[in-house]
Structure formats: structure tokens, C-alpha cells
Image (cartoon, rainbow, N blue to C red; front, side, top):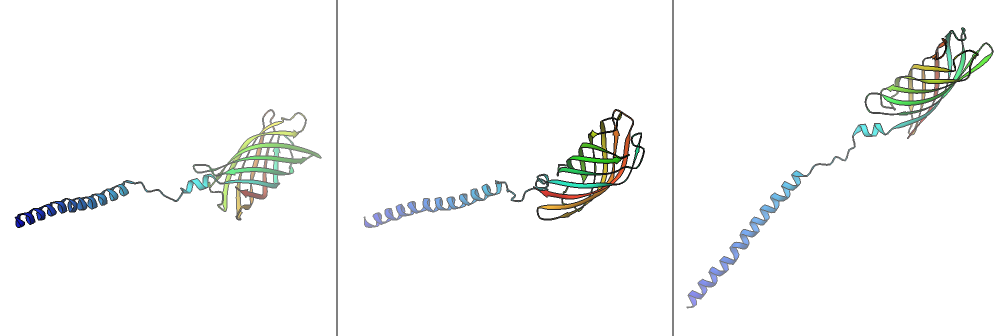
Length: 206
């Protein structure tokens, strides 16, 4: 009787231990597999922002003053002109190949003892797009209006210019100098202007 009771207790103890060991083994292995499978499926988030995002958000607000070095006019003043210009510009690094800019330019011409004044609004495209690159080329074009003009000459004109520039960068600003050719054609008369210029100024980054 005692032997039978001991066998019953032994079988009962073994039956109680086997499920716990199987459950512990199954739980440990399955939990590990689920953990690694979930970790592998999770997308990796890059902490580094794309380079284009930083470039796209960059902008420059600039002020420049320049002078004519050599110029000619046809059907307008018919002599070499002297003059200077002051320009406020905003440049941004757009998407694609070129940086885009908007320019408000005041131009003064001296001819035949008379001062002629013109205000131009220009849209520009500069290469390369990166606004901190030390050398750049650009073109710009847009409408202009003469605040002071010769009699019987068009007050409206179409301006366009091409230029080459050099930048010297600082932490939050830059100094630049540029030179090129600027032209305008009168809209309501046959006058036109062709001239070389040089200008320099400062721009602030934001």
C-alpha cells in the first residue's frame, strides 16, 4: 500500500513538471522568435536629413551697387552713356539645377546733360544652385519703367543681362562681386541700350 502510494505521488509530480518545462521552453523560444521578427520588420528611420532639403531652405537677401564701364545706345541717346545702379535682390536655392532670384534695380543714366532714371524688376536663374559656391554665372530678364525719360521715347522697356560672379562666404553673410553685360529694348519706340557693368555688395543668409 505504501509502495503504491509512493508510485502515485511520483507519477503525479512528473506529470506536473513536464508541462511546466515544455511551456517554459516553448515560451522562451517563441518569445525570442517573435521579438526578432518584429524587430526585423520595423523600418529603419534615418536621422540624417536629405542634402536637398537643407539646400532648398537656404536664401540670400542682398544689396549691391554698380557702375557702367562701357556702353552704347541705338536710336535713343546715340552716344556713350555713364551711369550707376543700385539693386536689392532675393535668391533662393530652388529644386533642380538653378537657383532662382528676384531683383529690384534702380538705374541712373547720364547723357547730354540729362539724368535718366529707370526701375526694373528682374527674374534671375543662377548656376550652380548652391548659394555658397564661390563662383557662379547667371541670367536675368524682366520689365522696366522709366521714371525720367527723354521726350518721345518709350517709358516701358524690356531688360535682360548676363553676368559672372564671385562670392566670399562668412558664417551668416557673404560678400560678392559680379560683372557682365546688361541690355534693354524700348517697348513703344525703337531705342535700345547695350552696356558692360561691374557691381558689388553684401548678402545675408537666412
